[in-house]
Image (cartoon, rainbow, N blue to C red; front, side, top):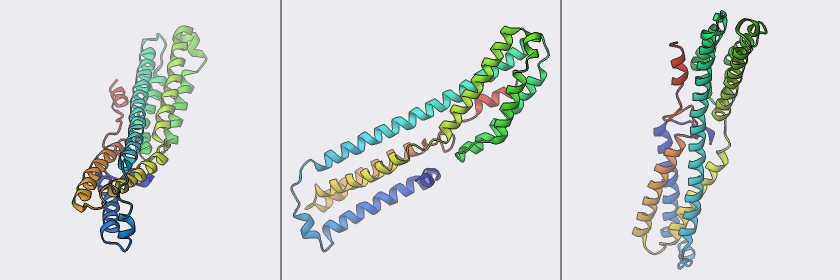
Length: 253
């Protein structure tokens, strides 16, 4: 499932189309051409089955889309928070009367590492030890005791809080990048889609044309809907990925 979610957009839609085309074709063959046709058609008259299964499919798809959308919103907020706190730290280092060139250098190194090293790593569902080391170096520079004497306790405390919030935002960003908790939901949704096809087929046991039309409409809707949701499954990868633009802007300071 993880491998499927990492496919390019065209391959992802194509695989969904092949899946539901295969299940729909197998269903039509089983109902109208298989040796079990008489046994299957004897179940004619079952009412409301397609509606029940379709509602379950729609509900779970809606919950999945909500989870994916919420994760992407949290990813955007995490990146914006991280960039905002980095900007605050930079501003405080410039406004202070003491020389904080080493802090600004460490800050720039951290941002460069996050943009050029950690962002590609997050697309592979992992993190970067190099960026972690860069953050540790930044935190080390900010937490030096002599800064309290040189810049004052108020400024130093504000800088420490900003540095801490940078780490929290980065941790949130990494947690969202490596989150795979929706895998089981995806399996369930795909299976429910196939079960909805079966329910639709059962409702049209005697009318082949109506069955094919109903299966085609549902399958197209499922492919488009699930494909668009899947494209947003990984916040930092794919066509709708969260970009490091807010962090890149800091390199211009």
